[in-house]
Structure formats: C-alpha cells, structure tokens
Amino acid sequence: MDASTSEGRKLSRGFGRLTLLGALLVIAGVTGLVYTGVATLTSMLLFGWLLLVGGLVGLLHAVESRGTSYFWLGVVVAALNLAAGVVVIRHPEGTAEALTMFAALLFLTGGVFRLVGSVVVRGPQMGWTLLQGAFGLLLGLLVLFDWPHSSLYVLGCFFSLALLFDGLGLIAIGVGGRRIVGMVSERLDEEAPTTDPLSKPPEEEQK
Image (tube, rainbow, N blue to C red):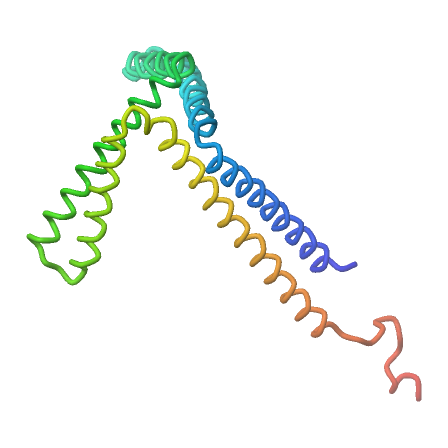
C-alpha cells in the first residue's frame, strides 16, 4: 500500500467521524425540538457549567499573572463567572425566564431598528430588511406576550435548532469530503503505472 492510499484512507475515516458526529447532533436537535422543556433545562445547566469552568480557568490565569495589573481584574471576572455559574445551576428555571425576557427585548429592538433603518435609508435591500424587521418584531412580541411560559420552550427550541443545523453542516462536510477523497484516490489509481517496476524493459530483454 503506497503513502497516498494510506493518507486517503485516513482522511476518509476522519470525514466519516465528522459525518457520525453530525448525525448524533441532528438526533439530539430533533429530540430537543420534541422535548423543548428538557432541552431548555439542559441548555441552562450546560451554560452554568461553562460559566463555572470559565471562572476556574480565569482564576488560574489570574493566579499565574499575580503581581501584574491584570491580577485583580482577572480575579473579579473569574469570581463573577463562578457566582453566575452557581446561580444558573441552582436556579435554571429563573435563569431561563430572565434570558427569555432578554431575548424577547433583543428581538423587539432589532426588529424596530431594521424597520426604521430600512424606511430611512431605502436601500436596494429595503424589502428584505423590512421583512427581517417585521419578523423580529413579531417574534419578540410573541415571546413577550407568552412570558414567563415561553421560557419553557424558547431557549430549548433555539438550542435544538443550533444543534440541528450544526449537525447538518457536519454531515455535509463529511459526505462531501469523503466524496472528494474518493475522486482523488480514483484519479491517482488511474494515473499510477500499470507495469511491474521490478520487470525489465522489453529492450533489455531482447539484448
């Protein structure tokens, strides 16, 4: 087996692992869309643990940089991350309600700014910007009017959609990568010499 064939198989296995990971993410995303309440709680717990881990890492960096002007700033930021992580893990429902309210306000303000900006500027993409602004405004109002009940499914829906699209992207990369590797391997096999390198040329055999 030559080096090119070996490398091709390694690349193909790597893209196959990406495809498998993408399929798992798609399954998780679809499951989260079905059970949005569980997905919301899971996303809050993951968010809390990420804050805790980030706070611990920041605290270690601050300790390593003691004696510098960065030390106290690093300690304060790490302490805030640790405190926020503890609060999120201990009160995931309340955190989901607060973040849902924040998301609704973001949708509202973003929609209003897009609507006003598209009317004032009147650029070539005015229709598309108007549509985006109206969609953001409508989504923000729907989430806000159903709050706090909307906190049970909004964040979980967004989290599941993120998993779903990330999984589809990984599947596309994995399948496309394996296809390209297969095409390159076939081209190399076609261009490889078919004669035995140990055999003598016909001219030497006649001599």
